[in-house]
Length: 180
Image 1 (cartoon, rainbow, N blue to C red):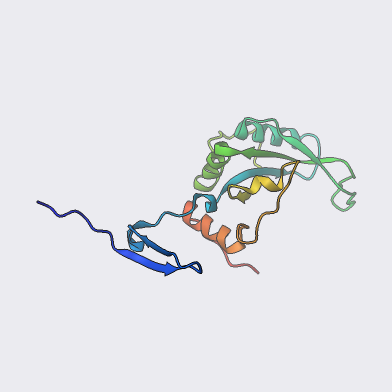
Image 2 (cartoon, one colour):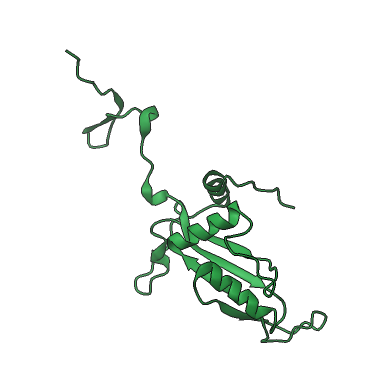
């Protein structure tokens, strides 16, 4: 007959009130679960194509974003006139789109893994540069966004630069180049 497993008591400590607490059951090496509220995830993914001029080159860029995301993109206007670039104030010069949820993860995965993103080359559209902006978050970040009874995100719950870099390296096997 096999003997039943005995759990070893790991830590015992007493509180100020004299009662005794013992933590046991799981070895720390065996597998202590991480807090699911501390898990990093993508809040949103912003895709941006800046053409630098309005008209003929901007509408195909909007078509590219619409094919990629399945959403209607938004046009961005120039903040001020730059004569050397030939840009006037309030002229539409860029197009962007924001994606949330599983679709954001799917598009980011496509963008990091392969260059073609699953879109066939169309000579009438041409080639454009595409910016990916990833906004990370944790469960509970929505308390800062709500209208009534807004809360602050605590210092320990905020995401540091190092945590974001580590998340990118672990989840997407990313290589981070050293800064200037």
